[in-house]
Length: 260
Ligand SMILES: C[S@@+](CC[C@H](N)C(=O)[O-])C[C@H]1O[C@@H](n2cnc3c(N)ncnc32)[C@H](O)[C@@H]1O
Image 1 (tube, rainbow, N blue to C red):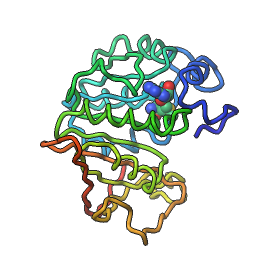
Image 2: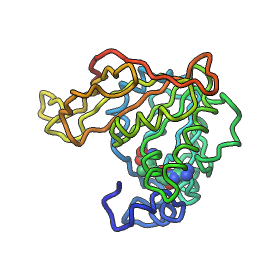
Image 3: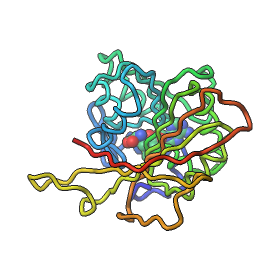
Image 4: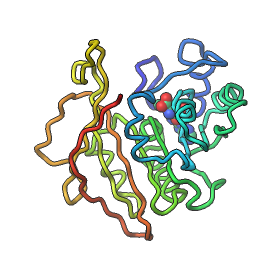
């Protein structure tokens, strides 16, 4: 995941993240320090604004010191609860955003969110946290626990937006295995500039493609990735009539979404 000196199995451990957020060289620059994994708000704005109304109660899983929540509030979002297993980053972010009432922070393990009642969030956002869990010592069990908790705390009709480097073969299988009646839409976003769109001034910007899944909820077998380093956005909608032991994925329609 990270491209640094740490062993990748540490990505699921609080101690790894506490050390990382304490270190000036890996993101822990104290008040004001930040790092956004994969994509930042400007690239994600079109899909967020399309899928998550600004009045939503949002839960940000494994917030780290990303700018995403702060940028969402600047753009009109009103209620974002941010959680992370690292007490170090939670203390930093509490201090940084103490004057922004729309943002709350708490140290919490995504595998046990019993603090939150069933159906208490309209939308759950995860940028890189399931990926960290999948690199942890207890993978894939920790990831399943997390997804089961996500399914529980989402209201019926609510959504779980997963932003990840995890390819559809693995991530759709994982999402399918959770006992939640949700429908998944998949968007693919080129991550390297040579595959992105060019503005008139030559700057590249991300375009995301909505991909039609097969009836059994997988990527079509003949689908060709334009950029082998793509990022993936899975938007899972919990059924209005969600029930245990009932799990489905349906196909979407192709369309293109671009950042402004
Ligand atoms: C790859 S980073 C992503 C950070 C941020 N979401 C972003 O996009 O920049 C993964 C984050 O998940 C957090 N994390 C890892 N395991 C966790 C767990 N079990 N519960 C809560 N947070 C966890 C880490 O502390 C870290 O901040």
